[in-house]
Length: 92
Image 1 (cartoon, rainbow, N blue to C red):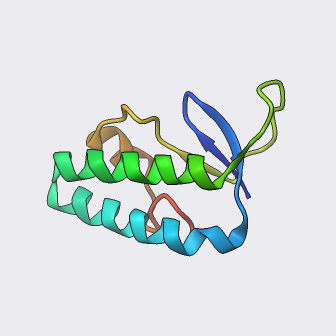
Image 2: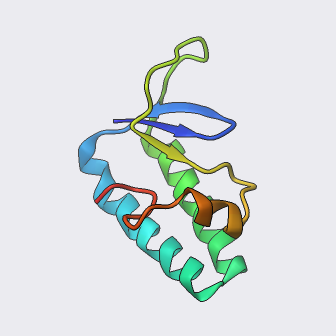
């Protein structure tokens, strides 16, 4: 699956890597529902860092359709709320 981190680029992730990412996504959603901005920020950074660690970056000159778009590291809780669907950031 091709994942884009807004403002950074695209990475390719294997399907078997998503259970771990789904856990972070669930934590992020819970923090958003509680309005926990510090927890949200920490979990967003953990999610993005893990995507960077697990993913294989596509070349900068490559532009493939992204199946998933994640917010930029500096996104606010309110900005991310506007991006979400009921399923969260990571498709289950």
